[in-house]
Length: 560
Image (tube, rainbow, N blue to C red; front, side, top):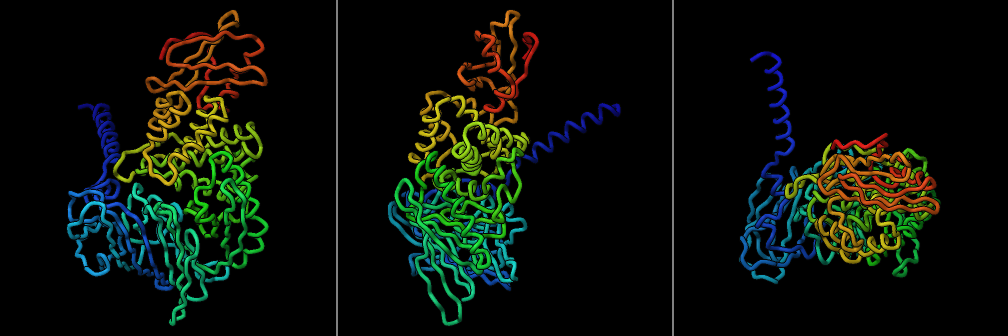
């Protein structure tokens, strides 16, 4: 074998090996990401969690009392409980009286249970302890954060999206199963500290050892990864917002030295977001539990009725405009984006992590819709177009299902541009708004598959967008729209290239008075034009409304 051939073969084998490594998953991935037989037979009704963190030792202990319903008559007498190392389960009590035995496989515990009949409810109280995983770069890397505020005092919280709530407490760690009747979180801390969590404060108990337990709870179903404690020198101020469903309690928990700054800043931003999002998406989903902003060291996360905020009381993303247009500096990115998840992510939650674009693409697009509400369509188009600078097209947005896999970060800007394209192709904002509000009504407090949302949009819009979703979510190819004008300047020829078979995104090209609608395919088509409306085919006009690359040709090119 000559040297050139040898190196060519080596290159091919290396590429194949790398590809295999990219798609190789372990048994642990399957246990974490799929509905195993040990998960399928029971449905979580409620979590009642208690935790005592030790700041100096970076140690936690507590329990989770899980109320569940048996949903299969024939099932293994084994329950899968997830808790990630180095935390350990100390003991498990069944129905307040019986101790259960268990074994561990990595981060999964298999709990031996008694035979149980369908439709009956039971409880398991799971005690745990240990030094938990610490977040290195919260919120992108999950775990506990043990840090200090500007005055050198303890400040603690948790982030765990993607990594999983089992990083800090035992639970059924799969997005598809939310506790139907809500959850509570009790946090025991030294008396000089305040502990805040989701929903409303239900109880405050002083203990003889100088600690205080704060119990918080939500009535609504809740994703396990959004149940989060915040511990620090917090002070509270509150107000009432009158929204679509009536009075909504707004609470702000900030570090004691930031109270006046927060009072001058937060309410205006929150009122603006609620005005815009209740217009586009319908009522805030959790009036019963209220809305809350809690100051954190990290940038922020969409914890349900308990949104974390660390954007330094500044416009943009800590003073940066992710769109590069200047428009992103006119509003607080974290307050808008993370609160947008209350509708897409917390209200509508995906069954599988692979469909996280339902959370992130729609919430990314909420930024554009917020700008549209405040500044109008032109500003929204500019902002959305500007976010394309963050698109990498490195890998598909939808990865493998059933293995707790996450797709490309393009689910944020590319997903938002996909929805912007669909909106313009519908060309009816009243209908588009009805689709968004309808999604939040139809799937209120539900977990869904991404395909359900896709089909809902196609059904309500009256157009099959399945190939559009396939193009943008499962490939890295940017559709190319090729255009050329015939010799008489009376016809515009057009077609798509670089597309999946059947890609059929309609294009509505609008001017001040003129409008032309075309539905390109992979075949050449034409539309009659006049000199006065040729400007509708200007590339920048099309590209600002649709995520396509426009190529002007001098004449027809029949190559694919």
